[in-house]
Length: 389
Image (cartoon, rainbow, N blue to C red; front, side, top):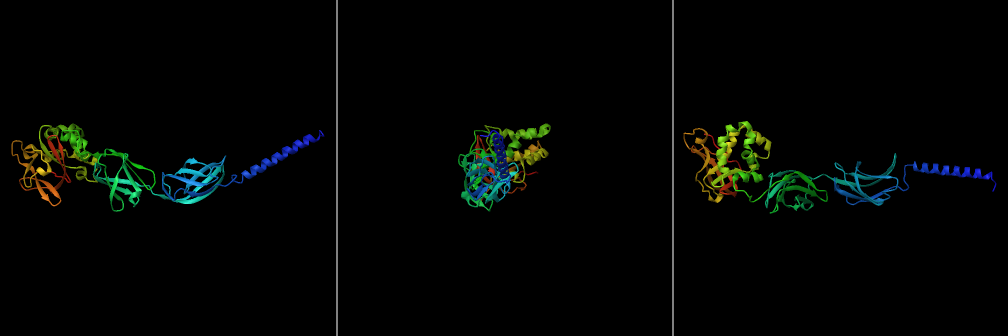
């Protein structure tokens, strides 16, 4: 071979390589990968934010290119990806729209537009009534974006599935607590969407507690949390002002803390007393602002010396309340007291508080009784109140 030909050959090879390299760069700069991605179908036509969704197609993942998925232009979290399928989590606050897969490298990209996804709104539980559950009984959930088909809704207390027993209007579900229900987190899901949960623990009433005094019962029973505040929290709430009211408070506590003195205590439950529009903080403020009223509340509720169930109470018979004129106004004077009387109506037995002058409150229905040591708590569906003289 001619030695002068060798440099010429090498230059030719180098020149040819340069041309091929430039050609390759030019092809790359066209913005297309080797093969464009294809998005052909979705695992389901509708889903909720937070739910998993599988996309199917071809060339969805290619070496050197970054794969991204968008739902109506919102970026999605990719959980798994292969050449022909991608699993994503639908982003929060998504709206219905096209699902798109893009392959990108720097400023270059290629996109595949797929079918439209119907993004269902996030289901919410906006409130519960009452604010506590009761084992074996029903409660109401105020919902939003739940399915109108009950078999597409699920509600859990902890790990227990609750039974949906009915509906009031479009957005209120009636659910039944299991007989063995205990305190737990309330959670729910609709359709095949992800689970959502309440922030706070739902407290569940039990049929009995291992206590022997009314004072301890109202601390355990979530239906009397306002009364727990009025009884066990009263000294702390009043602080330096407590000594001014301690005498009346101590009289009430003599009965509420006793294990050997029978008494009957008429108490409205939380929802009946505070109502749905009064918070615990507002109730606490009312105790601080009107402490005498809350002593009256305790004293007027107590019938000392008798532990009577609902069936034991006799219509028309007066049952003297601990709230007496002598205790409050004239220590050396009359024993005139508020007293309870009972009446039977078509839907049950009612009780009302009145005094010897004929002043009286509206009758309220008795709904339950709880035996606590030597005492009986009779739970009311309204406020018995008290009467001034």
